[in-house]
Length: 478
Ligand code: FAD
Ligand code: AMP
Image 1: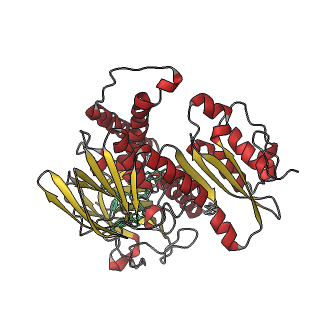
Image 2: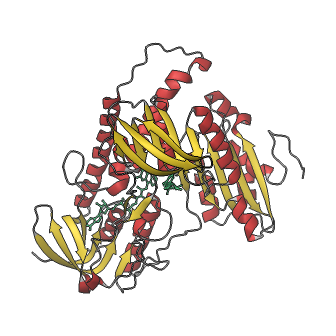
Image 3: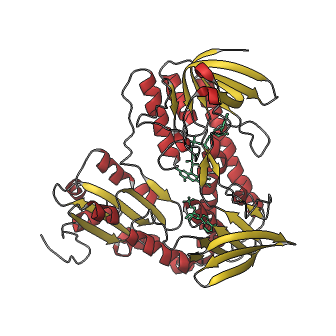
């Protein structure tokens, strides 16, 4: 069997499936090659994000946060709950159900948009031909007028800490334990390590996070990272910086971990180990030498700002190209490429990319950190507002954290917004929109915010950038 398509998308994650849907909306005859086999042993769309990433991790973070609150947070509200029981297998199966519903939803969207799902592994050959090894082992070759490569990323494995399937796991494995381990070690205090560490700590595990770097969350604004480290430590996450893991070994029921810190060689025995040391681009199978598409030594495909590769008509999007490994970044690139294929002017504003860490409190930011603005030599002012002074946060009983905005003194533009606190992921939206519209701090300051809401903290931070905050004493007045 050999078919000619307007577009063949290789990879059905949030970059690839969104690209395929947008191509189909624009009238292009589209196919998407996807090989994923899910936990139930069925082919599935949605990639890392829907199957073992964003969605299942958030399902567990939500459930475990409620469990943690029910155990420790309700007494202050005058609610005494007795006899709370934990049913981890049910929590995991709820997570699996959410995943199935969402991945099934993408399958329905493919049908509704008349997108052909080619179930199997795609390999790009010469002349935009895609060789597909189907799930039953047959080989077929299809051709696209345009090709979009969206094969994503996978967890980095360390040869010194080999995965064992249950005791030593990657991020996907840590979403499926059906009993709470006594002691868990996480290698890597990045976004994924902190989220998964939080899940198991809330369920009762002792959690130790070993991070090779001396700095905590270096990509986050310093004031926010400091606040986060203090809060997570108070919650019981044992975060050890400057601790480089050298080796792990399963001994009986335990895992022995050797690491080095400033005091020399250390060793630790735990029940489970999560390896969360980052992700790497997956291009080894998809790129044949005949495809002529250039990638670098880390496997990332070279693209320009429009996601065009070195070969005309072949595009690459999502985790396999430069930029942050985020679902929404890949999806926006998918939309941009689809629109450019039909001659429209799709673009991605990489300067306004929202970032979120879904711990409690959540951490969310957009734009530049204060450290970046300072090193640019820009004249700036900062406005901050603590949730401890927010009426709504007090009513919720969730007052940790703060909002921080950075203003360009010369033109009042919003250069960056940084939030640690309740619903930070949702609160970030107005700053993202302000930056997208090239708006100013004054735009936020003059916007009416409903009372009482958490978003008033953003309003007050904006007012505070030039000394006009109402509910906090200002150092300078205007
Ligand atoms: P992927 O989602 O990896 O999809 C690529 C697809 O291509 C896969 O389905 C794969 O099977 C398929 N494929 C690969 N090679 C071939 C081939 N040769 N032929 C056919 N198919 C192929 N990001 C966020 O924005 N927010 C979050 O909250 C978030 N949480 C995360 C939590 C965890 C635990 C993890 C692991 C990741 C998280 N991420 C999050 C990152 C997010 O999952 C990725 O950035 C996103 O999935 C990248 O999308 P993608 O389409 O580029 O790649
Ligand atoms: P991220 O890429 O954001 O998911 O973060 C992964 C983290 O793992 C980084 O902060 C790395 O410094 C850290 N890391 C990588 N290798 C090791 C190691 N051998 N021991 C401890 N931390 C590590």
